[in-house]
Length: 80
Image (cartoon, rainbow, N blue to C red; front, side, top):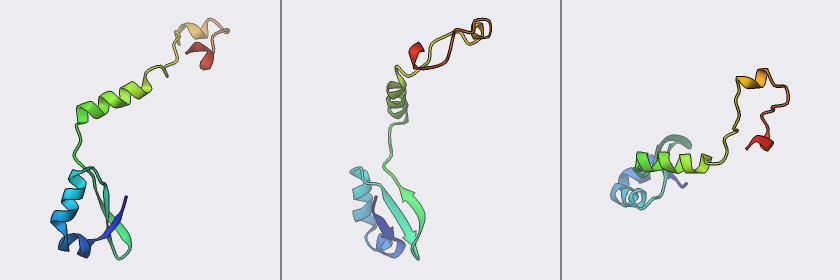
């Protein structure tokens, strides 16, 4: 993510907005400190679906209530 000084950002606003529109994230700085991040607008629904796809297969299956009664159940990778 490139750092852009706020003065440079003001001078070349259309150029940087075009970069963001193409998918580049920008960090705006003032006196060397980050003050803002500009990221492309995303599809929130699709982003949520992608996060769920990444989680698929990572759930630990088991009855957590019954686990109190049965000492042999453990929440480890064997229960995936």
